[in-house]
Image (tube, rainbow, N blue to C red):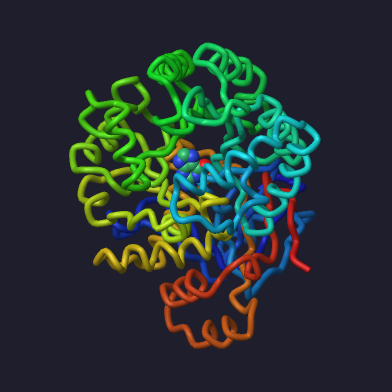
Amino acid sequence: FPPGCQAWRASILHFHDDPAFSERAHAWHEDGLLVVANGRVLAAGDFASLQSALPADAVVHDCRGRLIVPGFIDTHIHYPQTDMIASPAEGLLPWLETYTFPNERKFQDPAHASDVARFFLDELLRNGTTTAMVYCTVHKESVDAFFAESERRNLRMVAGKILMDRNCPDFLRDTAEGGVRDSEELIRRWHNKGRQLYAITPRFAPTSTEAQLRLSGELAAQYPDTFLQTHVAENTDEVAWVKSLFPGSRSYLDVYDSYGMMRPRAMYAHCIWLDDHDRARMRETQSAASICPTSNMFLGSGLFDFARADEAKVPLSLATDVGGGTSFSMLRTMNGVYKVARMGGTYLPALRMFYLATLGGARSMQLEGTIGNFAAGTEADFVLLDPRATPLLARRTERCDSLEELLFALALLGDDRCVAATYSAGARVHQAG
Ligand code: GUN
Ligand code: ZN
């Protein structure tokens, strides 16, 4: 290893594959060493085998007793909904009308947008999340505020301006042409600027005209390395609404498909009320599903069908969907997804949950090799977890007989209190206490 590198000694877990489909999907180093230089991973392995390769001046951080995992990846979250998390409503559509739209109006003010972006990124990092796919509002200013704050911290973030030209209040409405023109301007300003990545973001089919969906699909084809994000098949009232707005479409997902919006780097939130044909299209086009369990239970939307999704080999990832989601914590989100899968007859091992929250997200975003595990050359985004963070966790994890039991205890009992420190590109961006 070169002079000036840094290393962290702790237990290390990361993934090379999906444990649901591969016997040797994970790497586990009980007494491990993570070696980093210039913001990138040089190696992750056993302390005993790597330490002799360290140069004399290497700084070794002794974090024994802690667990290092790749930074969590939250593939669906709304930063403008931070201040309205945990707002009561009877379901998705009344919740949007009563809380979401009035709250998003405030982001026409750049000072407000910057203030919320700062708090939001602090909160993500406090929870060990180093990458997220983020919805801004319809206002360009909300995107500039977000990316400026993310770039200042050198975080790997994906975000975009909401496109919305019908079925919403006037104060949040763009136009088909204007919205796409603004999106293109933002792509040129922010996509691949440092670690920032742009996502074309039509909110969902009911709030875009056919003209806007068509132009969004064309923009996505014109800039194939950008991301695309939207909502699909979250709630039965929403599905019925889409059916009435697009009577010619085979299904809700088919609306997006017919406008060229299914492709790699397209992220579809929820995917609850899909059919097998939809799932096959997800796989064929390498469009990814973003599973949002705390939001789906909070809004009473439904239960994601793991068995069917795995049968069809849909690319899967995990997300909080704050403010529909009730926590920024990907550990709490694991707790939610475990129970959702269980209710649907699927048993989710903890290894799978940690995969979904790390490499699963990276693969869904076509970012394997950049983030999501500790392969040599990846960006050094990682989290130090404390398995003894609370009295109950300490008591439970002391009694663990296997890696699976340890991870399961963290997934079912853990939250932000377990995040001892968060690193982005090798630099500490959060420390507890
Ligand atoms: N569908 C359209 N917009 C939204 C939103 O902001 N949150 C959720 N959960 N679903 C949506
Ligand atoms: Zn959402």
